[in-house]
Length: 200
Image 1 (cartoon, helix red, strand yellow):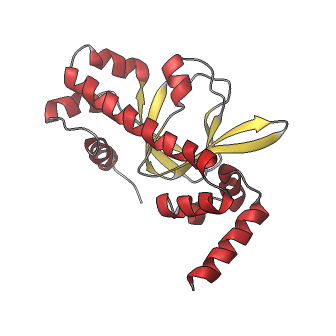
Image 2 (cartoon, helix red, strand yellow; image 1 turned 135 degrees about the vertical axis):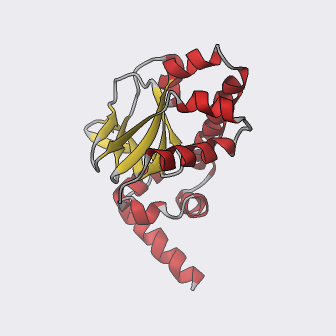
């Protein structure tokens, strides 16, 4: 199925408007700097060690963030369609990213580069307000997941994931979900079986 750019942009607009109110003129300005792109499953959209200079809205598909530690890949983030994705630290400080982003599925995204958005800030206070609201929402989302590691044990992390993003288990390989939860795949399988028995 061929997706029109207008459909992608309308989906992006709905997402942004859930965090901030803005008029048509403001959206026209934002729309003017959006680029549409695609990734095939397995493609790398951001390489570890490179500076992240953009924010992507995932119209369809999913991305996985991972870092290499002693030859092993540690999954540090999983992002499904309908979400915005960036490496916040790298974007904010313009320093090299500590993680790579890889498409877990064929993906369509809408991208805004920080440089272009910053230029729009000089033209429109409302665009500035929208940009800040969106980034703040992304920080809150990121912090929710970070708190999962410090506040919950493995089974509670699984329950948190099931409440927050249950579709993740159907769309992302289990080894990546387990790594994201900070547990072994075998542990995740045991928790899932135990939970299913409990809920019967």
